[in-house]
Image (cartoon, rainbow, N blue to C red; front, side, top):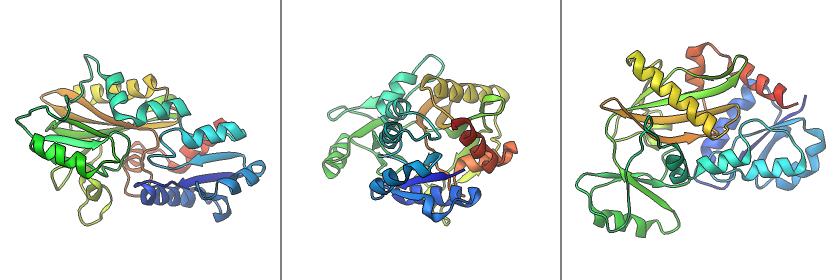
Length: 289
């Protein structure tokens, strides 16, 4: 079986995409000749497509989680793991995702615009993007306007800053169907779960898995993650992030190609659930053939 990994991307998450791909390449023993750096290797991929049985697209952010590479793979007739283009497109835009998910059971943070006044600090982040790149805490409307002026090429989502306990819940399609993984509680050393909290070994956040929470909160978080996975018709894997404040669950975002480095959350959840990362990938791959 010839398995190819498509990674890289021309976005701020390129480094993490390469690290995730290297981890998957290692556990599946995929030769270097079957690793494609997209979009640089686009023509090479097209030439070699007849020698590839299935692809693993590991591009976090633009080019991967926006459905671009999946559309190309469908066009050239190459099977691939993870969700289809529409699922990626819907979840990649955080505003669309939160407005789709908001229900009486899953709350979302209030959104602010330039000119709005607010008493407490707010949280700003790119509408499309991940790894907490380009995120900040803003304390005044003037600072919000300044932040937007300093980032003219980025569409910003400004929201109420929800202070509470942060959790992440993976969902996988596996042997017994779609199932939630053990919940991780994230306790950052700084103000929030930023890039350094995720990937810098000196400032890594504390990640507790399984989370020490009451059974009813656990059930509600896992039900919410399952619902999100289903609503967006995600395939193989998704990871949803939440904050819980006063027993209210606030949805943050959903990742359709979550981080897969050795320090990422999904591998830790799989370890607690006693599911082999390799076996999981092989199961997904087999189902695409």
